[in-house]
Length: 463
Image 1 (tube, helix red, strand yellow):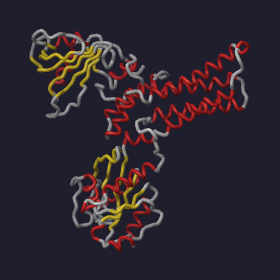
Image 2 (cartoon, helix red, strand yellow):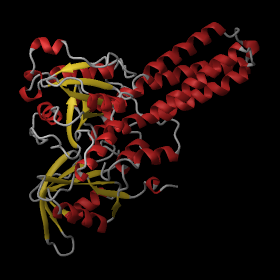
Image 3 (cartoon, one colour):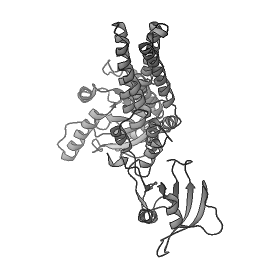
Image 4 (cartoon, helix red, strand yellow):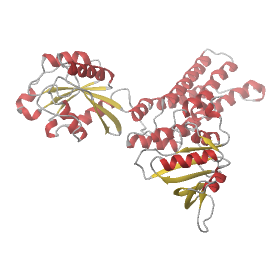
């Protein structure tokens, strides 16, 4: 049995980030049967404060043997079952930094607790029926959210917005299975099975699964973000574009070609989607060894990006060097950015030539902060016109959930094939049970230890 499943005993962990000289509060969380005993051993609450559930006590943490003062702190008490894990939980809210929380954690471990495994608090919440598996996964999504929209999607998952339709579909499959099995066991006592109704119900369930699967790409975008590479020959304004877009001076801007020698990153949010923008070195043949390394990194960044912004200089127009770069990146999703419009007459802009197969074109004057909104609109259009077309932005399934939904859909398709081949009812139930099991994997009603180990090992210690 994996170590993460050793869920007996009382566990403790630091539940907040430990950063030197930063963070005003550090929390040590303890869960289990000995949580209250450990709290009363270490925490001294002056006066007549009541040690009751859902109260916050003020006092001092002291070493139980030497009575040495460790910290002035607050103690939050949450007794079972009204806690995150449905066990007794206490939280020592200490001063932030490194020393205080580390010392308090060590005292907890010396007085009856063991160090929690990654995700073990949430695992206990799942095993004790506090959350289902979709809600548990939403916890880690919320912790790692890179945009307000990603956080909103995770909160929707925590509220059961994904679990509810999955349970409904599974219940419908169970009802169909009960109908079929009843006819197998008591055929003579019941009316004939309504084949058309069964086929119609299975088709409706398959359609609902397809709609849920359509949110998988959106979920991946919300969780991992969109990687965008700004590429082009030297001195076309790539760094100015990054600076204008990020509203900062992340990249050095000069009139000298080859100023950017390495890939410069910036994290942005566009339309609720986290975007990692990579400003790359100008791509050209060069004898400068340092610049040559930067050019090679630029090529790798372009090939790894989800979207390429091929930037050209409007005052120069489409050149042979631009054509060479385009040949290297045209297999990627691409937007052509015609920059430095402020250096060109209006009539000259209309006459600019570029490959006609490029559909998305944005015109900017990055040095004047012009065209950035149009660029963001074009990026969102590129995302929406691709395979990412989630109707419900709150529902955003992950890869594990998508795989289970695919298994369920495949099983239902096999049931439909079995019916069309007029095979006995016993054959219908085999694949129908497969669909029921696959749907149950999503919420945790049907789940293996290896699946739980894979999910909860991704959590940080203390969550």
